[in-house]
Image (cartoon, rainbow, N blue to C red; front, side, top):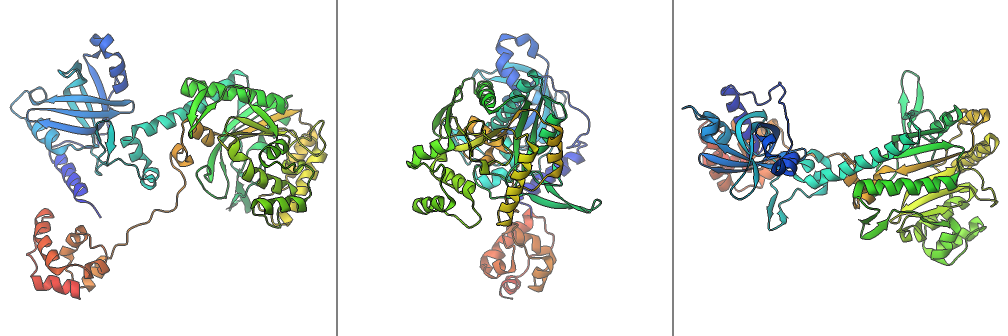
Amino acid sequence: MLSEQELLRRQKREELMKLGIDPYPAESFDVNVTAADIHKNYENDKLNYKNISIAGRLMSFRIMGSASFVELQDSTGRIQLYFRRDDLCPDEDKTLYNTVFKKLLDIGDIIGVKGFVFTTQTNEISIHVQEFKILNKSLKPLPVVKEADGKTYDGFTDPEQRFRQRYVDLIVNPHVKDIFIKRAKIISTMRRIFDDKGWLEVETPILQPIHGGATARPFKTHHNTLDMPLYMRIANELYLKRLIVGGFDGVYEFGKMFRNEGMDRTHNPEFTSLEFYVAYKDYHWMMSITEELLEKVALAVNGQTKIQSWGNEIDFAGPYERLSIFEAIEKYTGVNVEGKTEAELIAHCNEWGIETDGTMGVAKLIDEIFGAKVEDNLIQPTFIIDYPVEMSPLTKKHRSKPGLVERFELFINGKEVANAYSELNDPIDQRERFEEQLRLAERGDEEAMAMDEDFIRSLEYGMPTTSGIGIGIDRLTMMMTDQTSIQEVLFFPQMRPEKKAEVASENDYMTQGVPTVWIPALQKMGFLTIEALKAANPNKVFNDLGGLRKKLKIEAPMPKKEEVESWING
């Protein structure tokens, strides 16, 4: 179903082609300047803007007879264009201005222009257009966003539409583009730091025969040729560690991870994670390098270490507070849960209204208590360290605290941003940890890790003392750009299938007695189903058909009023 605007734009497309103008030309259009460059440098260097070429999308028109102003938007911003009929059409034929420019161009069309920069009487930097070329005829109208007195009206703000049609969101809401520019800067800053340290950027498999490296439910598929199940990776940890075994001192990967779990404002089933591993280091060193990394990222992205995020002022400058998981729970509940039995932990959960089930062991219960009673309080960057061994199957046992491991998670704004270990490199211990995970799986824990015999074999060849970390890029970007939904920092977040409007078939209308020639008119009037048509007012339908007959250029004679009534009453 096409709207009136869409039909009109298609007609304009045809008219352009009749004039010999290709609305979708194949040849290049050379651009030598951007809107941002002109605004920034023109006043100090006017001589270099006498012969410019720029391209972009038309965003507004002010047509005033033989002269007009247009706002053009390129990838860097907007700039005003000045069109004058006699400059564009110095000869008798004024078609290019009077017809092509004034009648056949629309908001959303992409054009290229050549001319020179000048300042208008109202002191606005503009481009005096001497030539223009249509580069793309837009067939769908953009949402009209109006601004007055510093306020925006009729904005494209519905999240459902914005996330489904990100391309429209980026066109009409320029501030959205800034989020993704900052996201790219976060990644490029990290990459530069790692490269300067001599670490190698690598790629590891996304399709894996065993889902490992984290506790999460995987997506499962089947490879036909190999006739075997494969899993989309939930983490890349075990492959990166294999590379440390192989002799690299430092490796890192920015990669997509996939977890078949719930979705909310901070979780998407597909997300981006940074993981890096460095030989001969431990988790104390990793805490220091994490503080250095995030401080430099904050400076690169926002120009300072203190930023406003989710209503809080967050300071990314180190050092960050360090609390053991037991110290953190005691701080915010008044109860020391260290050494508690499963039954005792369940009793505390019942007391605090935390749901439990029979699949939860001691580690899972402690994790649930921490999530319910502690996380929301950790606003400033805080390292939660020294977890129970049951919670961390891939982590080295603590060098001085029996029953614990050398692990930390970084929390900011009440959310986990990073997870790091002194990596377990004892193959015998690692096998025992995997076996414990298998026992949890037998109890019904769908997130338990699987046994990875090849990874254990790699450890048997010897992996040096190593520290590794995983950092959630999406969540970090949310905080660095003050966004409260993960969907705002993903170009194309995962969403439910789009609901399609129910539309009756041509045969349905004909069964109701409607001649084929009048079906488009009824659909245009909004009668997309037979039920809607049956509920219509016959007099109004008859009267509206007369107007639509002219608009749609229907050559058939008008139906009689009685005939229209028969369509409705059956």
